[in-house]
Length: 198
Image (cartoon, rainbow, N blue to C red):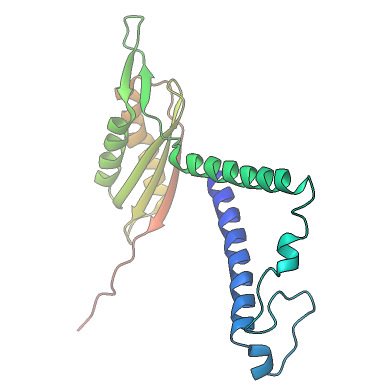
């Protein structure tokens, strides 16, 4: 969700900046006169001496009672939206601790990064996996694993996924005392230089 929202907001911001930049460039370099084309009537810049807001445009609403409250309200909304977006970037969904059953009725807490490190190292030890990355998400009592695996050229994806489930994830479930550990694995091919044959 956050990744999609980021992409949409960045695309819209980039589009607005591109349109404004092109309009300023066309007007300031007087390209419509040099290249002999016309711009629409609503185009903000038609020549090098044009400004974005004329004196009349800047001052015509200042005497109205609604003008300044609307300006401050719009700026306040923009500020709060930007602050929310910034805080959303800092918030992570990574699971910091996992609650496990210690057998004494109280339970224990296991650091999420410790289990991530174990998943990473054991996945990299598996045949056909050259590198891996693991992140735990979800809740303390019901963690979920997200793995990204770099596969060697000789690796078979089906064998890697089956081995990941039967060996790596099974050991992690047993060692942490978890009833289950749902996992999502993304497989990526590792690029290698072509071997020369002489």
